[in-house]
Length: 81
Image (cartoon, rainbow, N blue to C red; front, side):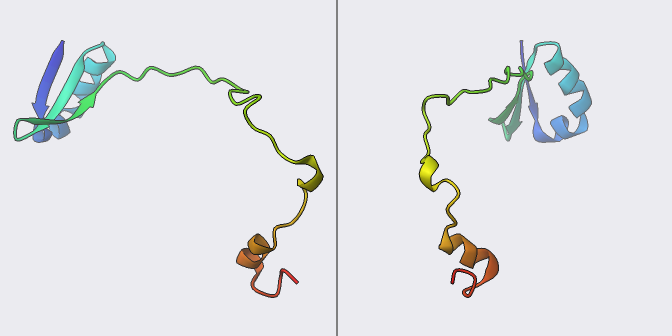
């Protein structure tokens, strides 16, 4: 079921609207009859570690090198020397 409310009603009855959303209902918030936002139940996504495994690489040989531009940004123009 979809419920449409105006912005004033959404601000006034937000708690009630969130209860409806938690029960699976969709709530559309409208300004002057034109939909501008939709409240939907949050569906958490599982956290996946290693999602970029095999897609990124770095150079071990130069991993610890200091970038002079970054040193200058943090410590001023004399830091890079």
